[in-house]
Image (cartoon, rainbow, N blue to C red; front, side, top):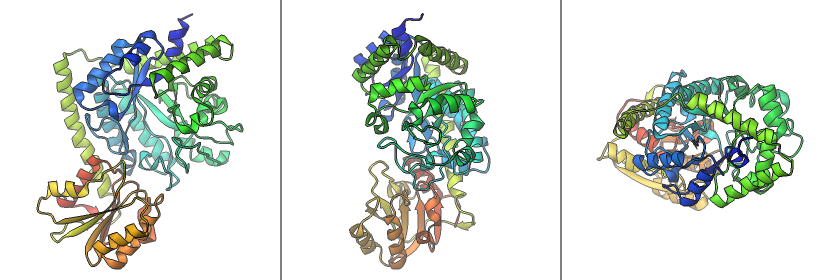
Length: 507
């Protein structure tokens, strides 16, 4: 048979901790202990550096390497500092047609292929029916299965047309969870009829053409009576995804380092269970020593007869066949200078397209045609002090219109009484604009909105992520309201241009 060490390594994707390939990970690739990596934001500081890193990974690998990335768009994208920022999937879902979904995915795929990335962990197939979902939100196309499936199809076909393998996620559906699997094991307790109608529908509708699917660390008791998440469940991975939904492509696990997994099964045992469940690719996004430990544990499981060599070879064969059929169609044969010239041209087109999509989604986020134009008088903007998203609206607005008069007040993401009192002290009898972030998860933002209406001049309220909160009573009575679908720096700049320049359709 194929060298067992390399065969097992072809099922493991690791992680690089820096902007360069460290010696310990280079050795793992050369030895065949792992067969590629998943890239993260910390790996991408600038374009030439990122290309060099990917080239090093590929040239160091004993087998045909896989380089993967979470480049969904909006809140989850790793390369927005070096490639074109991407609109969130919910922004794409807000557009009247699916054409732009294909167009932006094709452009993004072109850029990924040019830097040497094979696999994009997108599109998101979750149906976001829980407005208080802590992890999905604007990562989903929306809350209707048909919309999710149609947009996902266009995104998948766009990436595949550029030679990048798209991976639909998070099977069997993360959209109605109330906890984050990075921290705890989520539970979806619906019956079969509801699952078939909502959660499973996008996966069923895309199973015939998506080359990759990713299993989640979500427990669904009606599909798996044992206390196992989909990623570790034979019933969900093999009997449901492969059998009943007819998926014949490559099955990835979600990152096996999430606490939902490690706190319950431990890393090595969980990876063995995932392979027994039917996974083909283990995302082991951790240090070289832990990747080595996972490889050793799987080897021991084969030696003991717990996992058969045939089971390993089935996944290796599927990996090589599918990656080759999708990714190896794109081969850029020009010089390095020509490669970067093409990248820069593609990035310019991508930037323009993302701005158009983001702006159009914002403009269409409410049903009326009242015009918003940033007023000449002073405005107090009230913003969440979010630890991940800086939301520098004042800075962006001043860049577009330097003479603009803005006072900026920050509040705790779920503001307490002291935060609210401080905001009211600065906003009493002043025209104010309130920016919220996931208010259903941070309900004191509604208390803040109500207090501002009572003490200030409620001019504009902006939901920076999902639009769901705008329907709440606290958000009524504002002169204007809109949803951004994305709290990223790029979307903030799009908002500033919209507010200070173009006429926009808002309520």
